[in-house]
Image (cartoon, rainbow, N blue to C red):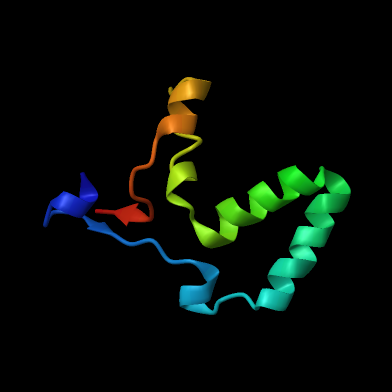
Length: 80
């Protein structure tokens, strides 16, 4: 909805776009997640938090079933 309407602003920015966090800091966080969770879960968290893959956007939408959350690929970083 946001991307197709002039009433909304939507933008997806990764850590590479913004430079807000260094790649070194991302890799440190990745290693911490690997230690807390598994390598696979740690990598997925890093991907979600820093690289905004379209397949994961809105994965935690309120009221959506697990299968609905996994299949959504809407825009993110929306404000009105």
